[in-house]
Image 1 (tube, rainbow, N blue to C red):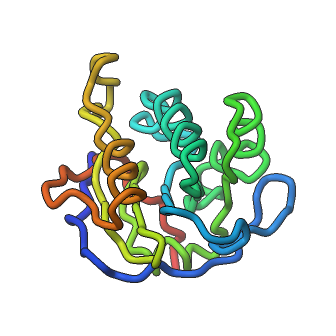
Image 2: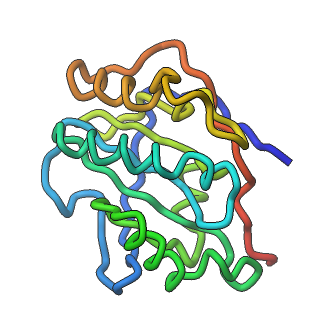
Image 3: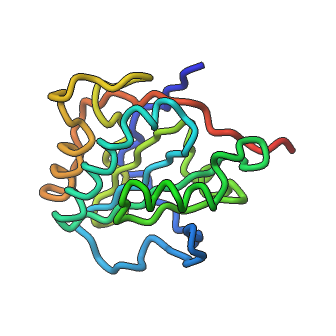
Length: 184
């Protein structure tokens, strides 16, 4: 069942984290110093919504990084229930797709809860002051990828944030699989 997160809560602060990647390196929001903007995206390995656009996610993330925008990907899914989302499989996916951005594992799921992440993919775009300016979709893709020339909503929003500090006021929510929360 598809899930759509709520609209952007403009100017909400980001939530600091320290999370490991597939090699055991721990990353935090401020590791790479000051950035024009920061993108925090919640993705996972098994979700068909993510898989259908993974090449676009990587393309846009790399282009944003080339423009001085910091990018982090986080998986918060329970790997006991979804072995495809284990840290080892995350590392292999990142290597296979040439991620230049860290792909982090939120084992406690506390970071995903702090952000209010609801689905994969779920994109959070922050200005240089760490204030939320975008919580929308990558493009018009759903469970299937949109046309190759689809408007690049996330990329354009992040570029606007980097240039002006403000995100677009009109945003279309992302859609994807629910976060796979651990059973309490």
